Image (cartoon, rainbow, N blue to C red; front, side, top):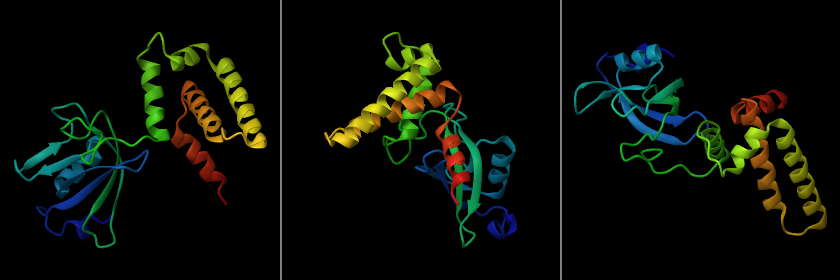
Length: 194
């Protein structure tokens, strides 16, 4: 990225759209000057220029809900940044996932729920039961759910979505149990895309 094209004037501000690097949801919009952008690159935490306070502001410095910087790109007019980041807790000061509302349910949200179960154990949690039992039990459930999905597809019993959802859930538990993510899976599939 040619910073001179973005910031002809060191003090000028450009809009910075912050996008969840995992699911591509928009988290927030802030403004950056050259100094805040360079600080973002250095500390790997998204840092803005606060127009109201007239100073640099690293998102999360008071709340602890940092935006971990992943990458950035500039639009075709060299006047707007798109920042890929991951959020640690709610992005919005109103305790919402993003400044545009709550996170819609997705495989990435399910991944974060399963990851939370891995860390914060609940005794009555089926997810914790599977994680504690390990790969053998999870693989057994995947085989069972795949079989039920195949039977549903062949018999046309109207349960394809139910069985597919069960299979996808168990697949995500297996990935997380083995310290793998949906992004890892996506990268593997991307390598195979010809």
